[in-house]
Structures are given as C-alpha cells and as structure tokens.
Length: 635
Image (cartoon, rainbow, N blue to C red; front, side):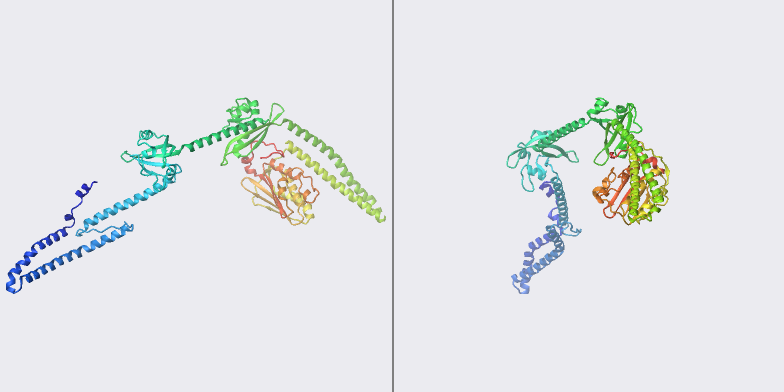
C-alpha cells in the first residue's frame, strides 16, 4: 500500500479529535475578539469609573485569560487518562510485552489513536510469530546433513542451512542469504535454473562460486514451490558434493569387488567339498549346489524343486527333513537306503536371518554305506566277543563261588585247631576269591555295557514303547540301589508331583537309566543325601537326581556323557566304573525323544535331569523323521 493510499484511508486530525476541533475554534475566536472585547469596556467604562483605559483593558484581558486557562485545564484533565494508558502500553511494548490491548470508548478523544496502536500491536505479534517460525525452520534445515538452499521467485537466496554455507565458505549467521544466482553461479539465469523452472528436477552438475571466488563442482536436485494460487514462490535445491558422490561410488565398487571375490572363494570352498551340498529355499527350490551335487543330480539342478531333483517325485516327501528343519529351526539327520544296500545320510541345517527366522536350509548328503558296514561288523564282533566272554566269565564266577563254599564247609572246621599262620593264609585265600568274584562281575557288567552300546550305535536296540507310570519305575530303581546308599549312610528322598501323567516309554530302559543315575550319585557322595524329584509340564515329565557329593569340575561337565570318560580318574586316581553308564543313559533318553543334562557346583553337589514325553501329548512332539543316533551326532 502506498503512502497516498494510506493517507487517503486514514482519518484526518479534525475527524479524529472533534473536541479538540471545537476548543481550537473557540480559542482562535477568543484570540481574535479578545482585543475588541478588552477595548470596548475600556473605552465605555474608562471615564465612568475614573480609571485609565489601559487598566480597564488589563482587567478585562485578565478575565479572558482566566477563562482560556480554565478551558485548557479542562481539556488536559479529559485527555490525561487516555494519554497515560497509551504511554503505559508503549513502555510495555518496548520491553517486548505485546499481549495487552488498549481499551477504546466511543467518547474517548484518543479512540482513533488507540485503535491504530492496537492494530500495530497485532502486526507486531504476527511478525514475532513469523520470526519464531523462521527460526524453527532454520533449525530444521540446519539439521539436514546435506547442503540445502531455498531461492525465492527472483533467484535470490531466502534460506540456506549451515552445510551449504560451509561448502561455499560463507561465515556468519545469515550465510549466503540475500545473494542471487549471479553471485553464486556466475550468471543471472543459468541453463539448469531455466530447466528447473520448466519442470525438470535434475540432478544437475553445477559449478558454484565460493565466497572467495573459487569454483566448486556440486550435484544439485531441485523442486519448485507454489502458493495456494499455484504461483511460483521459490525453488528448493538439495546439493551434494560431486567428490563425495565419486568417493561413495568408488567405495561401493570396492565393496562389490570384495563381495565378488568372497563369493568366488566361497564357491571354490563349496565346490571343494566331496559330499553333495545344496542350499534350499523355503519353497523347496534348489538355490545353490556345489560341484559334487551338480555331478550327482545334474548340471541344471539349481532352480529345480528338491523333491524333483533328488528323488524324482512330483510332491514334497512326507518325512522331508528340510520341512522338519524349517518347522523346528534345528538340524535334522535321517538315513535312507537306496539302490539296494547303499545308505545315504542326509543332514539339514537352518540358515537363520538377523531376527532368528529361517531364510534357507543347508542340505548335506553323504554316502555312509562303508561306515554302516564297519559299524555292523564291529557290532557283530562285539556281540561275538561278548558272548564268548560271558560263557567263561559265568563259569569262572560260578566255580569260584562254589569252591569258596566247599573250602568253608570242608576245611573251615579243621582249621580251628590249626596254627595261626594257617588260619590267616586260609582267610587270605577266601578274600582273594571274593576279589575274583567282584572283578569277574565288574567285567561282566562291562561286557553288558559294551553290548548295549554296540546295539545303540548300530541302531539295533528296539524299545518296547507303551504308556507307563513313572513313579513305580523310580521307586523300583530306588529299591534296587538301596543296599548301596544305605551302606554309606545316605538319606534318599523321593518327591512325586500330584496327578502325575503317564509317559510314553520303555519302562525297563527307564529303570536302567534311573539305576545308573542313582548308582552314579551314590558312588560320588560320601555323606549327605540324594533327592529324586518328578515334575511335569504340558509336554514332558522331568526327573531330577540331586546329590550332595563332591561335584564336577567346570571343565569336566561337558564331557561326562562321553564314552569311557570318568571324572573320578582325576579326583581319586582310580576308575570306579566302566565309563559307559552315562553315555548309555544319554542314548536311551534320546531314543525316547527326550533330553538329558547335568548341572553341578564343585564341592556342593550334582544334579542330573532327563525328560520323557507325556503319553497324552506324544503325537505333537514325536518327530516324523527317524533320526539315527550316534555319539558323534550334534543337533
């Protein structure tokens, strides 16, 4: 709005202050007629009163001055309140307080002035809010890591962030604000700016000029800004340093080269493996295959369905180990007999993502025909040796016991009168015969353990699975070992949970596990107690055997289930058993689809745990894939 327009729309002084206009006219009239009024009485009354004319004029003029002073005082009193209120607002505005407004009355002589001040206050508040919004917007664009600049419709910098100012070497809080394209780019209307106005968004490679006149090459993308009427109000430019882009591209290329080299090394290692190995997708597609797999299943095996490539089927196998691995997120091992007597072992392993989800499955096939033949030969040899050892062992133990009874019956009475040395020698013979029986029985147990172990390794042990009550099994094992723990003065307690469900198991084999665990606890507990506890959850029944013995050293805990591994060798220096009891327990529990583990604190005691499937839920937890167990297998 021009000054002429403002003066045309603003009220005049006469219209703004009508009371002042009337007083002004009255004072002018008084000033004009005062000499006349003073002269007339002086001329008419001077002679009558006997006073000088000048004195009469002075008296009349003083009266008129008094009247004028009264009028001025009246006007000042009427205007003082409005003037004080206006001055108070001005003082507050100078301190930044723009919230208050002046009250306006119809009879207020300063009403127009107050309205103007109130409008000015509103404009100042709006300007203050705009300034706050601008500072907020400036903070936002300063937080952007990339250089950014906003040009108005005339190509002048309206806003820019600190990053852009730093690139062009501008100091101060305003940076390049207020500078045009001619200063920044060396030309008032460059080609790239015209292309932006025509609708192109770039990117454009532009040579800007720094504050000291040095050129700098930048990569710029832009967007147009429009108001509510779709009129152009400005241009936003997002700037990137070309050198940084080139550096990022080089780093990306280096990373891609390293990835390609790593992929080549991985493929070489992958192909170097003699066994066929493939990577399967979740839909059954073969994603990768090594050289052995391509040689066995065809050069075009990648991309085919696994069931089509491996077994020439049209659908997924019911006992597919890959499906089991995907559903349970764990490795699975199965063995198939193919082409007569050939046996193939298949191991599948889950390849997990960052969040633990299965991304793919590694499939490893291996011909284990020779291994199984050797295991069968070993099992046959052990069975034959065990049989050949059992017969003479039985005879030796039996004849030894029989000869001891004969000696005691026939020679004992005659040695009562014999010399002392003869009686001592006779007693030593009896003790030696007891040792022979004990060692023979120990050798017999070793033969039985080796025979059981050979059956487990060969997969020939058949379990008689049925619903079983675990409490009588545990109580029977406690009774069978009572002679051992009572002889050492130990206290044995059994705790059975109420409403204990039936289990799906071979009761005789579970009794064997319990006897081994109780015997093991008794062996390593010199004083204290043994606690047996049976609990259950929705899927399993858990049995724990806890003792207060010497405990197991931390570095020995992971090896207690290995064959012929005995902790007491490092503790007392002499093995007290065969070292096969716990490995046999482990395999028997695995055959029951359960789990066995140990927890121990050295010097405080040891607790063995094992789980057995509940009979009412066994269908949900028994895997369809039959795993062949062995002591080297890890899942």
